[in-house]
Length: 449
Image 1 (cartoon, rainbow, N blue to C red):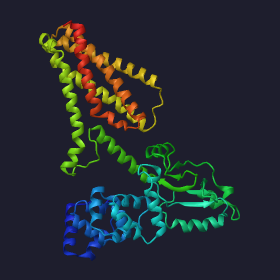
Image 2: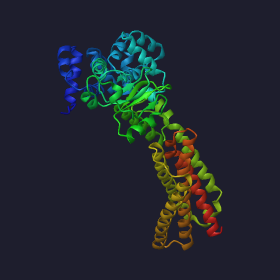
Image 3: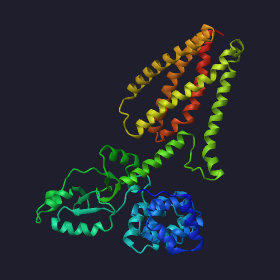
Image 4: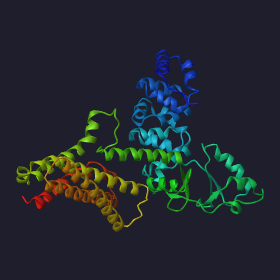
């Protein structure tokens, strides 16, 4: 049953902390899920949250730390000494522990690692810290169950019991050779039903999906989604099994990437939260606002070049917001489709096929919207040439905006730049300038000024 965090309950926890009533405080908290405790800590002050973190058992605290907001976690960790942090790290899976240590200042990282009593655990954490955080090596955990292909079924069962003590969830059993190279996977059913004197080599499945330590997180997510995997083994450059990426870690990665892409599409260049400081928020937003300002000034400059047209046909001025809006909207729509296709690797068409499709789609939408403009012009008694001018301009602008929205993210992707940047102010601003220019240039051709 889901526990509802009420305001009264939070106030009760605050009162118990203030009174240092540890027994009753533990009574209220120790039966709660770690996610619920994290939600409560989010409502408390830093000192109150730190007090509870120090009070709880290390195994519970380790789970809570992984649930609270990254910025809040950083503040809490700053209130703990190296030994206290090391005690929490001891209870974490290696991937979570590496994430926590990576967030610490460099001068305290080594001190925390030195205070970890389980040296094998510390060694595994150090190894994970070598990899890029957005690669399979950075996402993987070292905890897994692996068996040697030369073992007997009986010996395998005993070894699995020993390994299983350190593994939270057993998604798969992996088979390796004497050199540690991944050979396949083992079905628990086949293991249980196999004769006791059989060897693992006789019953394991040779077909197994895997990734390299340097495989990008996006590619890992794509493979796990495609084959509906709960976990995927990770091998090093020599093909040796070194870890596994589990579905919970890849879901967290996908969520974080989606948040980054959403912010980038909205014109926010850094990963920020609503409660971040003014300087950090300004630094994240201002660059794109400057780009938008430059784009607007560019549009003004274009319009100044056609000032004679605005004197003779003042009605054209009132259609400039419409043209700019259509250019921006169509560009964002096109780029969003391309970025989505690049992200999930579903963009299988050739560049020429994509071009023809966008041209066809632009013609259909442009003609439909142009006809609506003609109807509007007829109802409002606009001069027929003006209506034709606006209709042809909309058709042209839609075609150009669709092509820009298609090619820009593809070009950025090929140059190693996140194409999500193309779904925000970058596309909108560039299409505004091109749209205004096309509008007045076509007006000049049709109206003859």
